[in-house]
Length: 202
Image (cartoon, rainbow, N blue to C red; front, side, top):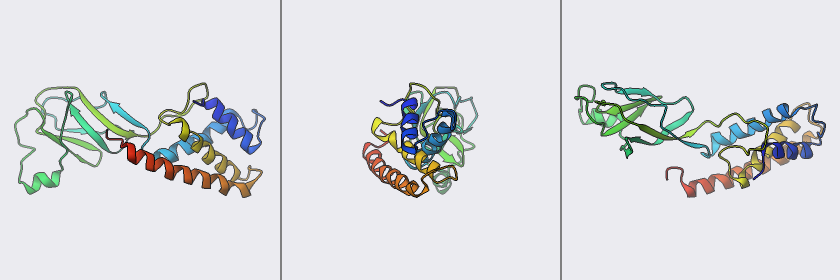
């Protein structure tokens, strides 16, 4: 599995910038990070199980979702038991007074904005586990690969980073930028199909 240092070397080979003092590896890393972030916004490859962000308190119904959570959670577990997802419109349609119900073990949850709402409000604490698509971490140089990406998909962030560099005034071969962006887009389409088949909700 390629390391970040190997991906940086690949970037240097393709743009013919072999002098590591200009641009520095840190400079190259910013371009790779841009590709990593763009890919994460288009394919749900970075999925986490988070049991630390939501700490329920008795009689407290609303909780802020983690800042890194992209969209709604894939699932929510209360004490190891998966809760069904509902929504406030359903509760209103059913004339359910979810705000006035006595505290008890939550039977379901809803999401509005960036807030998780338990119904009914919890009567005690428990471990709450969220699975969600997360914003990716900050890349660093070294022997580790970019987290969350399969080996076959790691080259995509290099395609994007090379295209981005070549498209800037510093790039020596601007006409080639489109070729690398095309490779990137083709890879994103392939990756999207694969992730749809795998289903991040499993």
